[in-house]
Length: 224
Image (tube, rainbow, N blue to C red; front, side, top):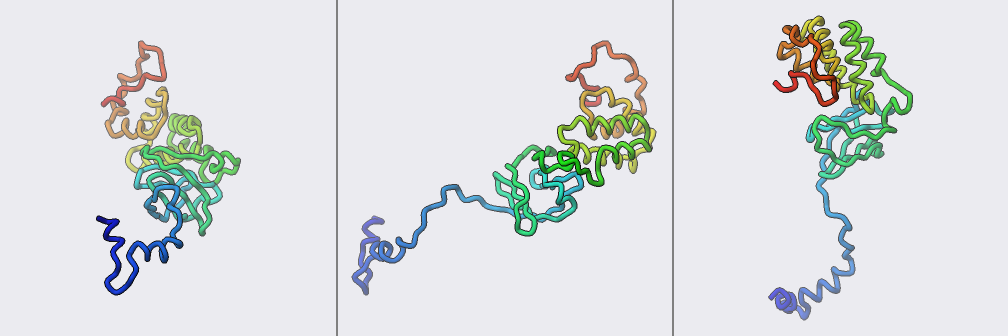
């Protein structure tokens, strides 16, 4: 019926819808896009001191060339990609990631890869931690140096230092002492020890374990 309808002549003309289309419109049509249309979203974000932007939509960090630390950039993203622009020039491109709290990193973006540390760096955080105590200093050192890219540890190191606003320094120092033997050194371990008061009753944790240390063995606070 559609074919029949399109071939009807207009009441006041000798042409049909089909003939009008073929003569007037079709010559101007362009090929369909080779890729599916993607809805684009936009944000304006600040490049953090560690050289990443934080996308709150998926709670993920994306690296930006270290030269742009502290600047505000325009972010254009779809369900597949993240593009970062400064004054109309694209300075970074990433595939989208839905891993919350994780980092998408291009090595060349980082200041450490270029031997051009800015205000934040290992020396800066270790010096800050030494004011709390030697165990905190060791813990933050491990927290940063264990990462493939040290910048990804700066945010956690900063978070640990800020815990001094909630807890006395001696408690943070004890929490770090308890957590130093663990295989992984992350901010959340210290925060959990302090929030649950494990550092206040840590006598039972001072004994030598009967099972040899192993990367898959975690402290009991991980299971509470």
